[in-house]
Length: 117
Image 1 (tube, rainbow, N blue to C red):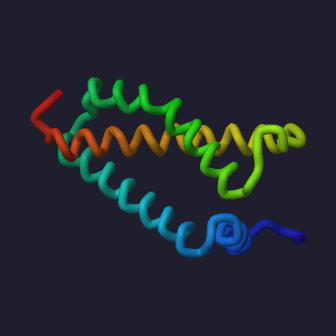
Image 2: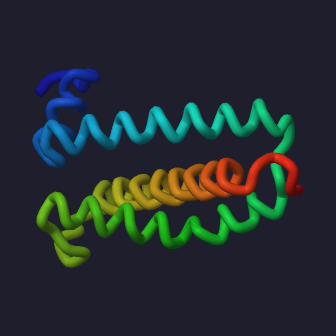
């Protein structure tokens, strides 16, 4: 592999997660992102109470994301081979933390409505 392209990344992720699960995760991410933008436009501001609860969920999202990737790749923490592996796992944890925070904030806003602060 001489260069890293978007098609290569899609092929690698489809190989790791399976075609259906990977594209299902992409579709879920797009839906949650659109719902988050809808909530922000509808409410015209962020609720700090909802944001705090979303932030409190971030460690759980980080751990779940790392566990999910390790489960799908059939590996363990003892398989970490070097700095690049640590950087990748930190990236996965970061994306999981941000993803769950957005999901929790959006779910709270959609369930409780825009009248609460």
